[in-house]
Length: 591
Image (cartoon, rainbow, N blue to C red; front, side):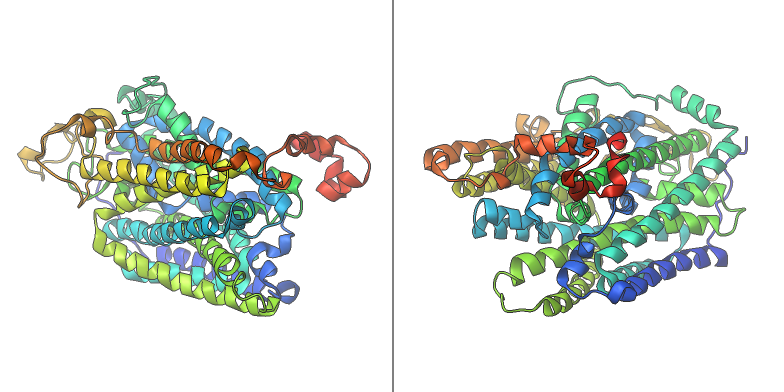
């Protein structure tokens, strides 16, 4: 088994592979700008004309889920905290079922473009406006970070030009989103999924070869305590346990798959509800594949550096740089493969950013322009949609520049993204699942949920949980060469999970800090959702919620569930209308 040596550097072939990925992505945008007569209406641009099928939409959902934060962050998470992260496989199943069986039926039967249209139909314009503004702010903030964070990690390890990468990814995303609309976004995602799988596969195969086989990697992980799958501690203060991942993770990811415009816009662009549901269930297989790859990369990281942790030894300055470091270490003899991995990381960025830009354009046109400028033609709205894509692309690049000044605020901003998602999901759940909920209850519930999740989230940034709550595993540098100072040759078990400019040091710990502010970050979204639901119901009851006349299309009904069985009908117009002739005979086997 080879010992770690000096890592390689980026060469010409690596830049060629990366540039090729960007060029092909842009070319797909140019193709869909003109294919089939181009983007004639805003529906064509924002929804692909509602003619998409399940498989490309499923791959697109998977790609936009897998940002560069996933590609770089999940392996380092497994390296530091162990393979308990793989319990998310169960979480993804629950998330997909909730999205497909609770939220999708209502959104699809209403034929809406923006999910926030639903809030006006169910409640009123004020609730819709609140939801829209929250979504726009959180998405611009998050998208800027998604562009900047991987660029910084890759720049510091590979020497890849930081601002060249930031501007190139932002411009290419904006270019193909503006030209090709949702069709271009979905088909570039399909291409980028292929790049991501190839990037992960190259790392996994080479790591297995160098370390002496998969069994060696698993043995090293077992001996190092990394195969810690089952931790049934019910304490909600522990960062990752079976319960925090299953319960908290389900709430966190359901707020993204169930009600976030970036994801919902994809599956309601399908040509039938059956295809839309099928896209979510096929996407589940993709999520499991990504999780398996990223967890195994984390175990390979540990196997390679179990005696000489690059982070403790100051070879890298942040955990997100561990994966690029491994790539340049084990793939340095194969020109182009390090470039393939960087293309893999940036494919995650491109897919996430493009879905965000397209979703931002959609909610702006549908929620802020259409209701107030009703005389605009479809052609004009299509041009405005393209213009908004350019504006939001520029804003996201600007946000990336701002993120570079934030430094340690990155973790805080990512946490705020999760904190906003919980109350928004609570708001939609209130509308879809609670028939007596009214607009007063919805507004008060949203404000209460948002205030509560912000309180716990910002408190956790100011007074981070103690190391025993995060449970980092042992990292050694005893096997490093002697060029490092003797004072560095130590074993560490208490690496801080996060540092923040908000953090207040040398303060007397109080019960509030050790309990409420130490809540697992996965429960932030859970708290926001449940407070919004509970307060919304309590306020709706005494304010006339029971007296309103509610259109049954706005809530989940028994018929929405029973319609799943329409695919078993071999003949009849219902089968044809719902699933298309080609799916009637075989579709029933798919679910």
